[in-house]
Length: 267
Ligand SMILES: C[S@@+](CC[C@H](N)C(=O)[O-])C[C@H]1O[C@@H](n2cnc3c(N)ncnc32)[C@H](O)[C@@H]1O
Image (cartoon, rainbow, N blue to C red; front, top):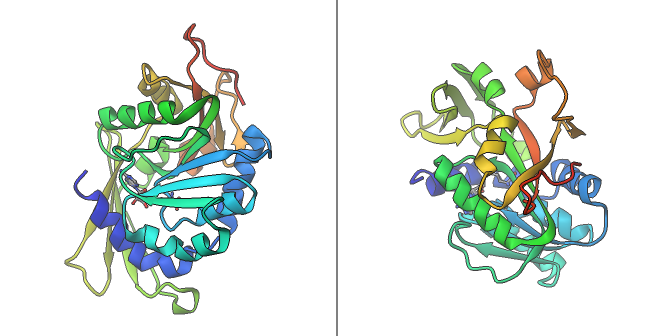
């Protein structure tokens, strides 16, 4: 995982100006939590919170939030912290594998990041999430869908600069997929510096594989939302075009596993 800090710090410098304010995506995540758990104020832990914009949106909606971020993306949360105050929003610069948080939370979230490292690394993180959660708590975790990332194999994209919107770099992206390890290999570079490429490697899991990964972690899959809509996991999804081509990530709803080993009640 030695690429992680450099990758997210450098991409953060490309995108922070445009993306560190609270936007529709952040408010949409608050709506998702309210849809799954109801609107009552909760203690929320956000892992990999980046610039803190989603944490800030949760704090604005009345929740008490702690965000954890590894890189200097966290520096961009300063304005949110000043506006919302320490009772509502705290950002901890640290590694979620080692950070020492004594609190318990009603909700733990990890948006758009799960899948860094090996299966053993994901299990280590899931066990930590289980320990942070209250017994009736809920974790919301975005998981990358291998089918859609595989369908992007070999694609390249040019992202034009748009200084008026805070995007100052012309960027190139190349995505390939390793079908044996089910890993998306996503490489980016600034068109002005083509020799300086950075790559993120994202392990992707189908819902069935996620269920297996969760075994023994203290968490179980209570439900899935894709495109914001609940998915009936017991139904036949053969040929489902959206799962095959559109939902590059889905939201896994995780609950503490029951002692009987039964899945918790779904969403
Ligand atoms: C793809 S970004 C997503 C950021 C944010 N959640 C969002 O949706 O905009 C993944 C984030 O997780 C952070 N991250 C990765 N590994 C981490 C770790 N071990 N501890 C804390 N943060 C981590 C990265 O630095 C990055 O900001």
